[in-house]
Picture (tube, rainbow, N blue to C red):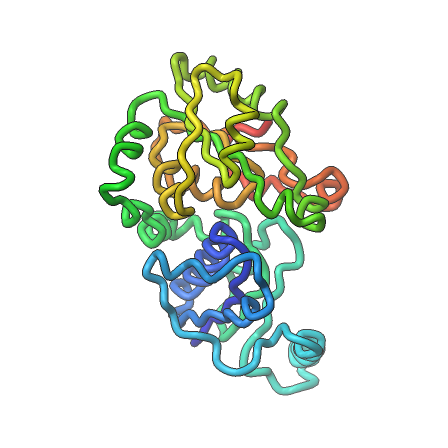
Length: 291
């Protein structure tokens, strides 16, 4: 059997998509095939999972979600499910909602996954193996050794400030919005009470903006600009985490499997208008604190 999966977006999104497909493939004894065709017309990001040594076979043939194919495939599958048409070679499985869909775990046939699948509930039964696949220690080298030793000290807290396309793309900003300074101030006050003497390590794709925003924090250090893989390594090795509304810092916190780890996440993962129609609670592990 085969599990095909649409891969697109930044590193964090790609990790969710692959974790979903890989876990499903393990349940049903299937191979994973990656559909990377979307990157041909997507200039913001590139395929990034190869940094983890992931070089699965590619989806063969045209992408089932391009042009009219997805509508025709939905219609064909609907008729097949009613016994009115022969079964297609694979089932197109579309993410209908942002919240966890438990029926996904009952799939047992050739399928193609189209969505973002942003919940650990899709792969929680393989959590240890997913952490090994995405183990960021592979990105450790002499150039980050000093910074790694610093963040591994007790009381370290990673703080993620996401800017980039959240600023540059009006469409992205209208969907996700930005974590404002009020969120970081409230999160820091709570973290200082929970972890007296903690020290904040600020990670951002805009270090200049981070330096401006956090200039009043005497217990903070804005980290140097590095590759996203190096940032993932350093963030995940901090002792506690204040994440942004970003799948990238979600993964940095989730990869830290320490039982003593405190994770604070923004309740407003999207803008208010999007939140009104998008339940997001399945995105967050139960022991994370939402502010």
